[in-house]
View 1: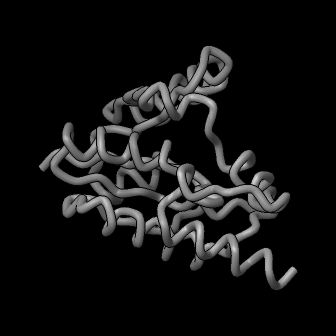
View 2: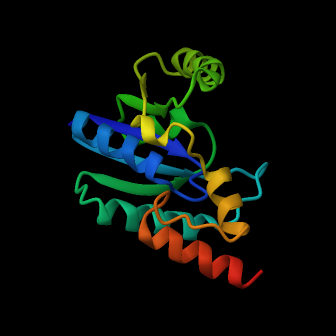
Length: 162
């Protein structure tokens, strides 16, 4: 069974993320979306909320070979534990490449048997990221075309209580 890991903060998961997840799900037998626990970041949603939203998005997209889990620590250690052969990374623009390339090389040094696979989302999502979605929602904009329905509702609820 070929397993891939798609790591990220997913704060929140967007349609761009979901596009990458769906592409990976076609290429691999199993995809584990890994919600990063990163003490250096202050996400809008808790780890459990982000996991719930990723799971809802995957269910809505009908991707039965995709699961979601939280992880902290070194990504390649998590990948080894899951017996993954690949790490999925999304590239929206050339500006993403330099950072992602450095990370891929470090991961290759740490775990030579795990390959990084770069996937590009559909061009209609190349401008999209979680920060933009949070800002549009915070300013009262409509995000229904940018995120799955469960995420749009969660953003509305979260911002109502701030």
